[in-house]
Image 1 (cartoon, each protein chain N blue to C red):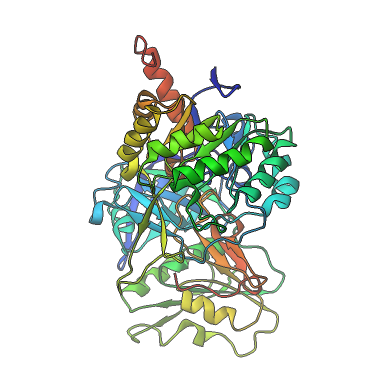
Image 2 (image 1 turned 90 degrees about the horizontal axis):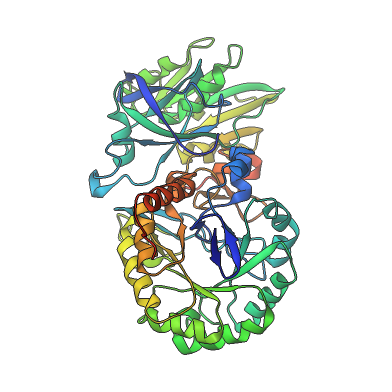
Length: 292
Length: 250
């Protein structure tokens, strides 16, 4: 068992927020999904206070070794999530981490407080890759702003609070330290890298104009950023970015992560998380003490 | 069945410029017509034009019988180019069957297909008693794929250049009086949008670029008449025409 902020997890592999819809997957794959659930904890897609339809299509662009998405965080809003999704997510065989996003500290506090009341939710992840509508600053990209927002949310919950860091910043290590100083129990990284694809007329292809680059193309950016953040924080780290195999996961663990999240690879292989966890176990069995 | 599985290619057949690949899938659930699979070659998936393909590709099942699945490919990019290159003994990653297929109707069905979009209509025709089938192609070379429809009477064919069948659009073959009829259509977005605008009972099988095919990525959405978006992979790929705001060009 892995201890992560007091949660006891079967293995090191969870999902990245927004890369696996357990409710839709259960419809597509049936009960076998629960018998062979690929992750040791499930992270919900991002929930906002009000419902969001998401960005106009097209939303996807395939790149060399990856993809750009411009999904725009479609979700039913907090009330819809609590009423419709939470009872179904509570049936999953693993702890539930709910990811929330707000454009002010007040919105994030309201979301965190609502999650705090629900026993089905084991931990809360803050998506801070969003401009603050009050200050105009990108919450997660500016360390002082990030520390202020996390400190504002912290009193709203006693559950573990994970801050998902954005890689689209000058100094991710400073952002990691700021999240910890604000009271985060853990940090997760990397989110997608901002990217743009042009159509044959030179116009942005994606409906949202820019999107987030993910997949193996960003794997070594993730290793570098996890190592940089690990050097400056004492809280545990969820490392992610382009993980396709147990060897890739092991790189992130060795760079300083406690857990590893799988995202884009689940699109290619829905059961990838379980395979990667198995490969990690085999690596551990074949090595004297790989995680020391 | 959860996850992807490697299936062996057992046959490769050409119909004009199209390729039909049959795979042996003895353990997978039987698909309903209109359902689809996510496909990726086990070898050399990547390293093509622009170092692609990377993501699997969504394909409606063309035909399913006795543990054997058939898919219809047209060479439109690095993914389809690689899939068309598959030959006997090669392996294919396959996830599925996925999505909601055609729904049954009490009305008289007319099947309308365009280009590579005829695939889910061939699967549907296999389950119907001598349905009326209208197929549109670019030219006589492409129209060789009309031979895939083996149920009932010969399909009526149109071509853009008049080199086979009727010279014009496939929608021109529709009867003037569509009362009592339900249309089942799959093809280019402009064809589906023209059918949607007829305002008659119709089921449209949409195509969309998908990263996952099982509702995870939210990338394949289409706008709904009531506002908002539906995921083509889990809410479709077959939609009632009246549900849709439009059939997007992409």
